[in-house]
Length: 403
Image (cartoon, rainbow, N blue to C red; front, top):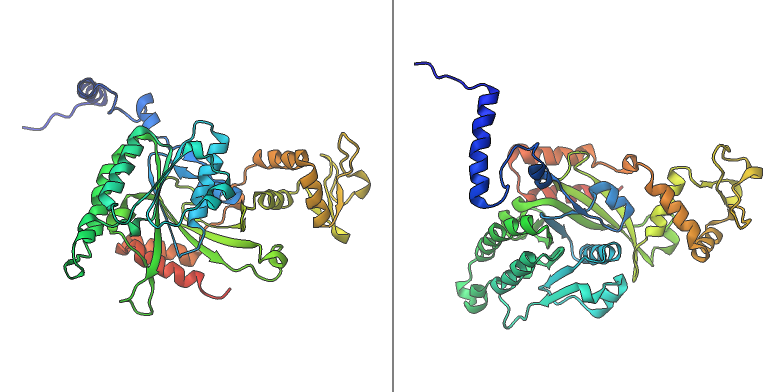
C-alpha cells in the first residue's frame, strides 16, 4: 500500500499541535518554527563590543551566550584584550558585571587601574594552589554564569589542575585527566551560558610541541575546548617596521595581530586578520585608530608641506583658501601631526566630532580577510579534519615568514 503524503497545511497543523504540547509541558516556548518571534529571538547573536575600532569591524565583539577561545604565545596581548573589553563594556553599560577566574596568579592592582576597571562590578577569584583544584573553580564558574554575570574570563585553562593530579604522585599522573575534565566542563557550561547570556572567554597559551618536527606550537586542553568554541582568536605580537607612523615611538607601543581562525557567529568575512596598536600602560590607541580612519575616508587630509586640513562639504581637497572654519573661528588647518595631536588633546570636542563622523560610515571595506594561503589551510582543515593545534601551527609558519 502506497504511503499517503500530507500536504504542507496538514503537516504544519500536526507539527504545531506537537510543539504546543511540548511547550506546555516545559512551561516555556522552547520549540517552534524559526519564523516564530520567540525562536527568532533565540537565534539572534548579541555581541559585547571590543574597544579597538579595527577589531570591532572585523569580529563585531565577543558573542553572548557562547564560548570564545583566546589563544596565543605568552605576552601576546590576550589578558590585556580581555581586561580592556570588560572595562569598555562597564563604561558603556552601567549594569555590566564582569568576572575573572585567575589560575596563574598574574593579576595585580596596576593592571585593573590601567584599564579603569570598576571594581564594584568586577568579580575576581584566584585559585589557591594548596586548596584550589580545577573542579572547585569550575563549580564556582558555573555558579557565576547561572547568576547572570555578563562576561566570565578563565585565565588560563592550561593552569586549571584537577584534584587527582594534585593528590597523585608524579608516577601516577595521567595526561588525559585535564582533557576529560575540560570536556565535562563544556557539557555543563555551554547550556548554562546559552541560557544566561554570559560571554565566556577562555585563555589558552600556545606551547612548544616537543614531539613534532621542528618544534611547532600547540594549544592544550583537549578537543572539546576547540569544538565548543564558536570564535577562536589567535593573538601574536608583530614588529613595528621602518616607515610606520609609530616607528619613532615603537618603544612606547606594541602592534598586535589577531587572526580569527574559527568563526561560527558570522558568515561575512569569517576569517579575518586585524592589526591594532596598544600603548604600554594605557591600552588600545583608539585615538590613533579613529584618526587613521578619518584620513582613510577623506574626512581630513594630509597635504603638502606637512599640513593637515578639513574642508566643508562640497569643497574639493586642496582648495586651501576654503578650509572649514569652526564656530569659534578656528581654521581646520594644522602644520604637522604633533600640532594636530596637541589640538585634539586640548579640544576633545573636535575629536568627538571626527569620531561621530566615522561611526556613521560603513567601515566593512577596511576589514582584511586572511591571505589565500591562510584560507587554503582552513579549507584543508575542514576537508581533512585537522585539529585546531595543526591549523595554528601551519598559520604560525606563515606569520613567521619575513615580510
